[in-house]
Image 1 (cartoon, rainbow, N blue to C red):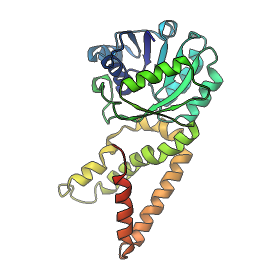
Image 2: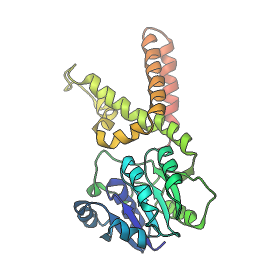
Image 3: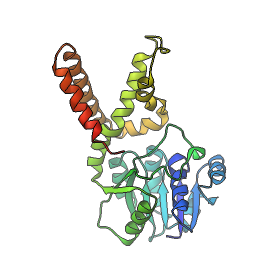
Image 4: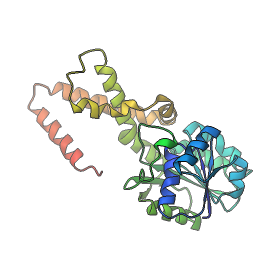
Length: 272
C-alpha cells in the first residue's frame, strides 16, 4: 500500500490520515474534499495534498470513504468505472447494511470492505482530528467474501494504529450499534430536552453534564445514521422505554435495588 486516498477529510478521515503517519506509513496520503477542507487537513498534517475523485481512483491503492452515509451511498456507483482493479475500497460509515448492499450492487472492478471505527468526538472537521482517536477502540469490519492480501494489509495497518479489529455480519452490526451507540445518543438528546426549561440548571452536578454530553452532536451527522437504521433503533428505544417504565414502577419497591445492582454490574464489565 503506497498511496491512500481519503474521501471526506473531516474528524474521522483526518484522524485516519494522522494515525497512519504516526504508525509509520511512508506513502502518499491524498484528500478528496472541498478546497477549504483540503486546506484545513493539510494544515493539520492529515494529508499530503488534495486530489480530484478521478485522480484518487487512478493513483490510490486504498480508497477510504469517511463521508456521511448518504454521500457514500451516492459515491459508490461513481467509483466503479474509475477505480483500479487492484484497489481496496473501504468506508467508515456508522451503519453498514445499506452501504454493503450498495457496494455489492455497484463495485465490480475493485474489492470492497465495510468498516466502522467505534470512535469519535462531538467536535467536527480536520482541525479536531487526532492521531490517537482510534487507539484502543474497536474497529468493526463487515467482509462479504473471503479475505485477500489487500484486506490483510489493511487490517495490519488498523492494528498498527492501535485498533481492536473484529469482524461481524453487517445486519448484526447495525442491530448491535442501535443499542450500544444510537440509543445512547438519543437518550442523551431526550434527557437534555426533558430538563430544558423545567428547572434551574445552576443547581446541577456533573451527572447532568456527563449524561447530556452526546446531546452536543449535530443532527446533520445523525440523520443518515437514523434513516439507515430506523428499524433497529425503534427496537432499542422500545426496550429503553420499557426499562424506564419498570424503574418507574419500582420507585416505591425494594425491587429498585435490583435495577441498580444489575445496571452497576453491566457498567462495571464494560471495556474502556
